[in-house]
Amino acid sequence: MKQPKVLIMMSTYNGEHYINEQMDSLMAQVNVETQIYIRDDGSTDGTIEKLRPYIEAYPDRIHIRSEQNLGVIRSFFELMGSSPSTFDYYAFCDQDDVWEQDKLIRAVTLLQTRSAAIPLLYCSSTQMVDQHLNAIGVWPKVPQKPLELHNALVENSCVGCTMVMNNITFNQVKASLPSEVNQVIMHDWWIYLYVSTFGEVLFDGQPGIKYRQHQGNVLGGGRDGWIQKWRKRLNRFVNGNNHYILSSQARLFLAMYEESLTHTQIEEIRSLLHCLEKSVIDRTWYAFKTPFYRQSFLDNIVLKFVIITGKL
Image (tube, rainbow, N blue to C red; front, side):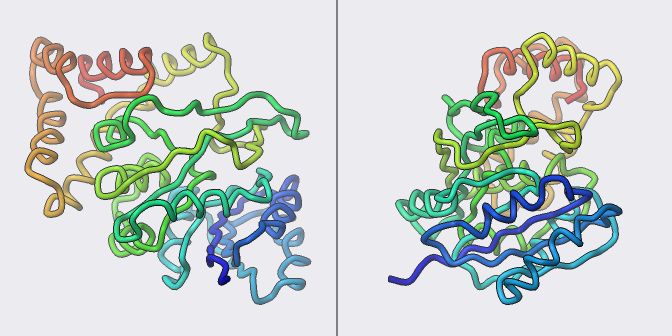
């Protein structure tokens, strides 16, 4: 029986400390035929040197380009734009995690239970580990609310390094990659938003990767305690770091896909954006009747607060 063909897309940047463990786990994937496309985002350490033995051992399976530093979002979009459209499935990959041997085949098997005629996206919980791969906890929890537009516009419920897309998702997103990347919060959030709107998102509660938490993470997982997590959020809000990022991404999404959205979807997104220009009374009224939601009760309260302040 022919094995599914999966393209693994990895963006690297100064990842010499952990790249070997990740590459070993990628080469150990079972019951799938894999190729790995790597875009090095201008590393200044020994990342390329660490990768060279793998490239020499598997010249037909591993392809690497060393290019200028663009940042994680642009780098992954560049990978999508330059990758071939001939694979059955496509997976994002970070440089410092460790994948379970059945990570990809588990994702593919679940995706194959759904219609291949629509955009599909698999994502999962992760086994968070410290830098020495000691278990910390499982994150994120299985979402209890639907993974569709009303969630995806205001929250990313899918961790990028767990994502596996079908061919339709990859090619449709690739055909219209956002040009205003500064308005995209993260590449994985953008794809979650797209598939939740036009296809189906499948969430697997069984972790398929060891998600390493260390000081070099671009973005961490859920390792922070409750108090620390909320202190960081409050500080980011007070400092203005997250002001208007949700509305900017929503505005770009609407501009790019308005012709494909339903009338109801268009009106709901417009209502969210327009309410931010109204009085605090109007924003408060809208916040408590908005159709948009986050997964947890407390995160939903924060969403309403941000709408009321007009800083969405």
